[in-house]
Image (cartoon, rainbow, N blue to C red; front, side, top):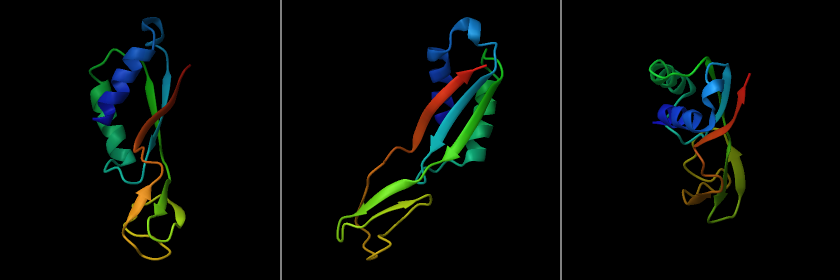
Length: 109
């Protein structure tokens, strides 16, 4: 799913004459996504093989998420999935930055 989104994004944003050049795509994954960096890269390479795009390099980083406890109000950041407040252990919290997949930028070289 994410691999297809990246390909669609590139087809929309990269001019035909630039598709033969080296393209670097910077992607961010949140900690609650079920996609690993390796699985995203493998899926992307498989989808890319059927496309008329040049050399595309996928740079993937994991992002932290900010979480606010609805009971005590404690705000924390985590790079791993969280299931309760680290301060009071309450399982009721709000994710302040819910994005799990972001195409941050791309460069044509």
